[in-house]
Image (cartoon, rainbow, N blue to C red; front, side, top):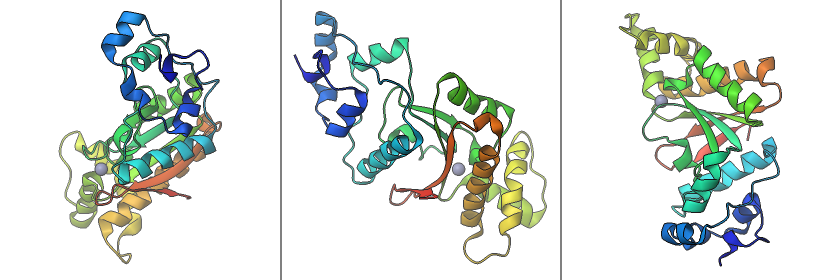
Length: 235
Ligand SMILES: [Zn+2]
């Protein structure tokens, strides 16, 4: 019997803290099915924002160092989250294929509630999805995750620079990012990069002043495509 199946096994966060990466591979699916492995103990409740942020920082440090644990993918964990979910953080990120939150924060099934739209563009569906995480799942941390070389930010910059209209549904996305592009026009540095940072800050402030999200802390973050590192703001 491994520690995951022991009645005295520490809780989910305790396992994370202990760094027992081997647990995720110790319970083979076949063994789990044959012995009706009990589900791991659930956490007592959602993590507070500081503890949730610490989990994300630790996970990104593992990702950056290529020392990922790939937690919470084994059969027992899958069975436990099939009946109840307790994500500890909400990540509002871009659709970019290089920035999947579960990978860059080294998290697994049921750990993160992720909402993704190009350039973290807000609309009612996105806001309602975030609200679900706060109200129904009790999550107390929202991370607005922008990233380097964002195509949506680049499109907004191009739109502001040329004045050319944007065709189709993308127009709505560009419209949402245009204030960030306009606000950073002419500033020192790379315009797209400045737009990314301004958009994160704009969305962060928008959520922070919305009473719907008053029970959650909202932080901004930027993912560096080259290093894999996430920098949080305020850090
Ligand atoms: Zn993007």
